[in-house]
Length: 172
Image (cartoon, rainbow, N blue to C red):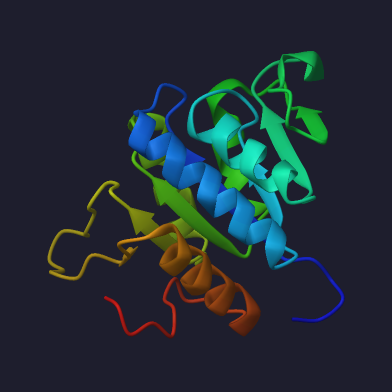
């Protein structure tokens, strides 16, 4: 990786399970150890856990917040961006990144996955939505089984500069 930090978005529900929070925290730690910047929605659940993990390893975190007040960011967000866009901020979260890691998630996460795929940004999935276009059997999300795999795949895709929504992955 060059001297420039890679932005990796980590998306997931603001109300997540303990297992999802643990995965997100580990993803944050591993991204920070590899020098990547974590971009997320800046609130609780998966977003808070990934930021907590990144900060525990000295990483940089950016939270794109739905309202007009940056103060609502979770305590592990370094840079809180008050978008004033509500849920429309989901597009900004994923478009600010070279790759996206989706952990679990609700409808907001599903919208972020769609924005990423539409923008040609690779999506790596840990226990998240399955999507495919009508008439296509292929799920465009790269499926992984661990936080380490998720980070490896995301960084591989981000460093390769994939613009077609795919990774050079072996784990489809």
